[in-house]
Image (tube, rainbow, N blue to C red):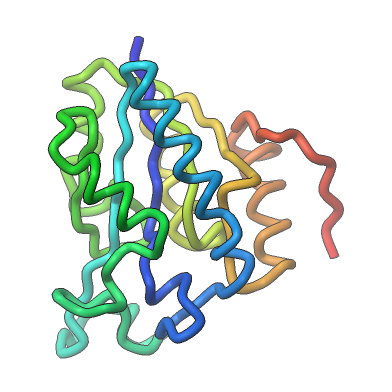
Length: 190
């Protein structure tokens, strides 16, 4: 059975120093690991999926517009993938096992066809990476769990704004969602 690697929201707004909602250095250093994983998945005939935030700052009804500064606006520098992912996407965009889609909620499943896409390809194992560990990665994981997908969280390929939130989310993946956490590091809550 094929499996899928999800690289969630690895954009300039979430990763670059000048990003509107940046996780900064913790997110920047995972870039090479994301590429390593993506290459390995494609080489194995598996899938690489890039669910990516897309927001309209004029949407008065979208809850994120009240919580966060404008980010991942269509056509903006902030919505472009942070390097080295942008170069990887440019080189692999035509590969049929690479799927890129916009999302407008924390979870990659909310308001998208992700579940249908996965089921039509008989994918039942998801490997999660990207940003933010305690927001979009976590909410995607919760929905994946509720849809009965087997989960692996690559703890060396996720990042967020808060060390406390990062540690809590990784523990939640392991102890509540039953995810395999790799590398399996022992974490203590602050």
